[in-house]
Length: 296
Image (tube, rainbow, N blue to C red; front, side, top):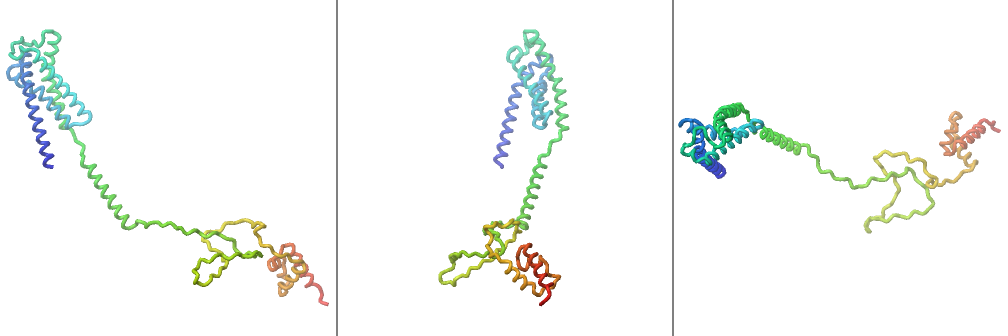
């Protein structure tokens, strides 16, 4: 930090020295120009401060102002720099100006050029009054934009986010999600299917010394609701032996022997014997006829 500050101080000091020497060189030429256009000794001595001094003021204003005011200060700086350059150039072209032996009000042999140079030299003091006062007023009324507010707001936002993140991490951060790699059981049809084909036993995964495992068919439990599977195709149905009319009647007699007449319905017989509705109605009529017949 000290090295950086010392470097800046040395740079500013060197710049001031260079500007002071350049002002001294320009001061000689502008003093002679002022004497040639009619200024007395005191006015000629102060004339360089009017031109080059306003250049320094405009340079400082460009460092303070911003926006349109800064552009105005740059225009003033450029205009007076160009005017000082022209007058120094004329002073170098006319050696008589050095000893003030030139005619009063004569800066060039060609009249239009002489008139323009005299107008330029005499208008610079008036312009310094106008532009200098305007620049001073702009600098005094300038309100610089604070640059610490955004930094403070940014720091406050960073602290808020840091505190919020710390609170969230301490209280409500969920644990790592471990995927469930266990496959869900497949839904199977409920019931037992009879088959005449021999069943091949599954290979046992138990150790050799362990007791043999007895395999049984159980219905798998599933937490998901079952969807309607539709009608079971004929090929998947278990074949059942067809009963004759006499066998159905015998089973119906045995199942309904203790039923009262009011309970002897086709739907009850169908559920009890597990037959078709048509057979159940036939069995109902037969059983009712047997009950209604007189006993011999």
